[in-house]
Image (cartoon, rainbow, N blue to C red; front, side):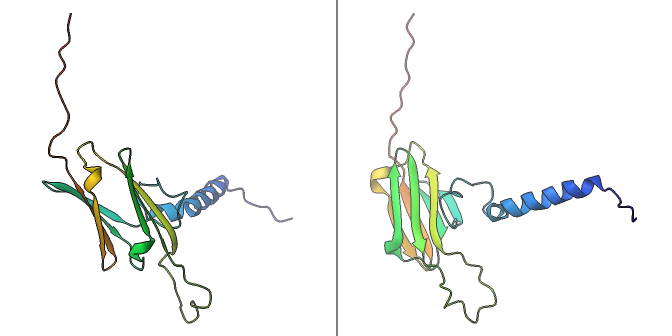
Length: 147
């Protein structure tokens, strides 16, 4: 009979590897997993505040502008679209395919100063740029408390 050495940490390491493998697809997206369950890939997006507007720039190479939907409602900006996936026939000759295809989806909370009526978007060289103007005035006032 061959004695087997009991290694209690082996089970912990195996569990850790399985958990890492399970969450690996979300690691590349950073902390924002708001879209992970509803899409095939998440485009990286830069957000910048300028004096008169907010600017979002999303990398979406290979996506036709007509396949992009942008909705602004209830203080949330939603970007949704689709990049065609490589078919099995087109994969012949490739040794590696890293660019994901399929549906993408992102949501962003907008500040109260965003002018939803005048949002403009354009796509140039695979970069979607969304300009969100700021309202010229905000509706705020001081309320006096009466005794």
